[in-house]
Image (cartoon, rainbow, N blue to C red; front, top):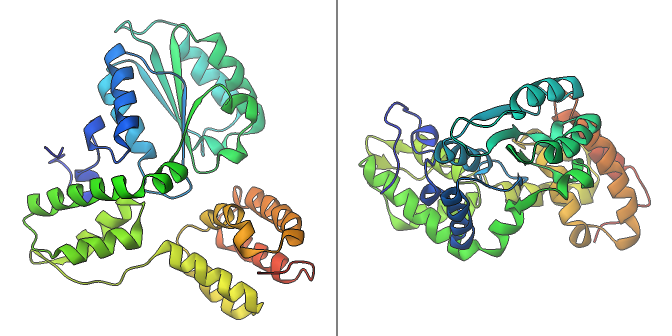
Amino acid sequence: MISVNEKEQVWAEKYRPQTIDDLIFPESIKEKFREWLNDGSIPNIGIFGSIPGTGKSSLLNVLITQLKTDTQWINGSKENGIDTIRQKIGNFADTMSISGNHKLICIDEADYLTINAQATLRSDIELYSEKTRFAFTGNEPERMIEPLLSRLQIFDLDRIYSENKKELSVQIYKRLVEILENEKVQYEQKQLLGVIKAYYPSSRNMLMHLEQNTVNGVLKDGTINRSDEIFKELVSVMKTRKFKDIRSVVSDILVPDSVYTYLFKNLDEIFEIQSQPNVIMAIADMQDYSSRAKNKHIPLMKLMVLIIGDENVKFK
């Protein structure tokens, strides 16, 4: 039975997962989390994925709800300095939970933590291991130091969703059907299949699309914005090296930071091998700059300028 938060109106919040069964994950992974919850504890974990809406924060919320232990939540994009980390964690982690289980410190958007803060966490994980567990989420684990990552059980959602697309697409379809039927919305199967194909693996984007295109209890055919299509369009216009066309596509990208990961993971398909070191250097510089930028389209556009302006960068 689907979980429903009747206090919420927006579908993405109303149907946010509340149990392990609600999550869109391979059954083998859900079973592992069930085992940990039954034991009353989990290991230190890292949940990473470059695409928003795939369940990073939802998984943490489920763990918090079902562990029933003392929990501290830290927003790594805002509370990312070493002093904040030392104070918050030190004050919280050194005592036993009232429930007797391990306490849980959740650090959301951990890839925004400073290097010094990450180094501190590396030692804190060991220092407080008898009483506290740590859970991290982030979009880009490559921005985190290896000594910290090596202390975590990593769940790479990009890989998980890629390798288990058939199983997870079935789970998503069943969940969307449950939601539409609960909302008493009329729909056609081909509409849902089209939405899943377009927005996979982002369940949040699928749900937002369905809600936006439901009128008077009927699902209408609306415009679908496919992230993979706009990435491919960007690569296509990059090859023309036409600044105006590239700028037009960049302005339509909803999550500019996602482009860095896309280009890096598809280097072999986009660039000649001898060009790849130059591209990686440009990506690294602009990704770091983007983490501090107010308008993230600007550093992305600068990356485009660096790539198309480099005569040594050759496209396939």
